[in-house]
Length: 519
Image (cartoon, rainbow, N blue to C red):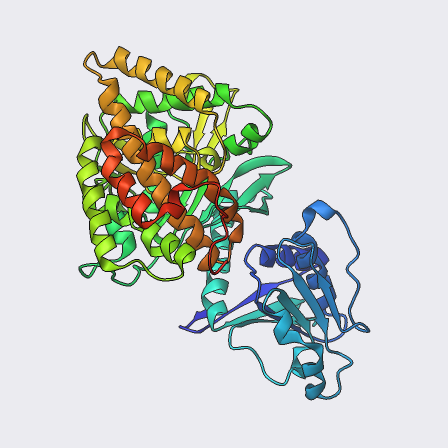
């Protein structure tokens, strides 16, 4: 096994057809639209077996559907798979120029390209995974995999993850299944042993710092976003030690950004809400936040890979997040960037509002305490009924932030009457814990944090569409704009609301189209 900057190679033994199928399934966990996988080897070496296994693994819900060899059709597309696939067989191509007529480059814009007999291609893509299958019976069948360009790092990652899972399994037969992740670049797998959940593989390589955007620092640095799995280990471990249901760490390779986490199941709050189950899990999640507000939280946590610092949710982080509204939403709806004078006044007004959130001791803010990241565990007792995932970006900040995230969910409409009932539940718990708890002061902080989060989310959802090619988040814009308008109605935010009405009314007018310019 050798590793270079733009080339990586491994060899896998394939003693039987099951091993070839397993390789296809493993590859399905790492492929993306636009990838080129080039399969070579003599007739009977297992190219079609590997291709079928990969395609089937991309659509497990469809069962054992037919995957015929495209020897005569040349190109067989599959558009119902998780990633669209174009299965290509160039065996009958006599002249490389004939390949141009197949329109493969156009297909590669949206499909995974799975090409048998790639020697017929006139030119090879710079970023590709070459898989050469051998049918040498004497030496034993094998697959030689060579990653070129962007595939070099991914193939190395694939091999690292395989070795890590094997160490975790300790001889047990563990099946690896794709698990839909969040809006980040992290990758997840569900590990299954004999039909039972064995854990969640989190693949979170340390992310390099982004380009400097202010005073020589990146957005991630200013906003205190986690760039390594060390943050996950630190936050989850402390939460679990205190009786909260953050996934326990079952295995770790923090140096390489790999963790096996406890599998808390699929009863995500968003799914419960869609089934009409809202009040009981919501109340339990409110109770968790009230309990967290009563505790003192560490700023530094020791991990097997060094200390992790829980950063303060300071003014710079608060403002850089609020500015996502101007960086992405403003040009999306107006067609031009925000002018510097408007930006300066916007920052000034938010900085003026921030002190309203500072009453009380800071707590750990998980910052994504909402329906996609909460899991209902009714078999557990008390506070442990609420599973907490996606915790790595925790900061020390106002208790009102996570409560606003929960009760003003950007993805699900929570009735205002239920929101108020949950606020009253929270206030009652806080008064039990703290005789001097001031409801009005907290309501002001709740409005500021709700408004700031709504402004941030409007920018993030537009960014997901424009930068990351994920337009589905736009359907939530009317809801988030309504939340922003409602929070800005608090008397303490009158100046900020006036600024919004004058400069960016599109952000507080829910009935307007969510598509905007450039959609």
